[in-house]
Image (cartoon, rainbow, N blue to C red; front, side, top):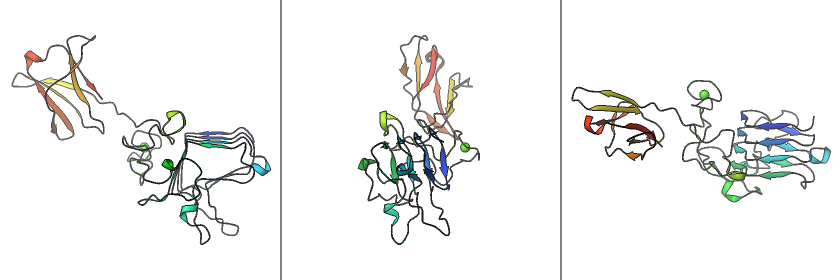
Length: 242
Ligand SMILES: [Ca+2]
């Protein structure tokens, strides 16, 4: 079948993709330990993607994917030589760009035969938790997924066109609810849940602004951050800004 598009998939502990037909687009996928399964009688798989351009897999695009700890090393080819894609045949019609490759944690070694940009070769990709792809909820493609990039991930905006490399969009931004209640001292207590993001409490006289930070350092109380604002200062509107 020609013209396959594989976009924003997560492959963990899978086999390899063996492309034999034209027009495949592989874009913004996350590969973790893909192509690590040997076939017992035939061969060691060195790469999670094999593009067989010599028998028809032409005009293939491999873009903005992340490959972590993929491919199977052997006595002949060490871990530094495996783990991304292999073009088996003429490469003129194959476009590979914006991809990131790295070795196994915790060392995240570089690859010796990587032909793309060296800054996308080796090092920690900055996942939320590489040991827990599904996240605590056990459900794929939710907010807590471990293969989402952290806020400090080098994958952010590092792909072609400024796209984030891999299957996930920019780091998930949770909904943070701002609560307000009047407390015994007569002040207003504002609170919001702790977050991976730094949220700033702002105040404005009306919805059109101008908005200005509330000049009180939040106190951490359990899983929340709290600010107390005196009643005379509590007129107007409040919001959280990241
Ligand atoms: Ca999840």
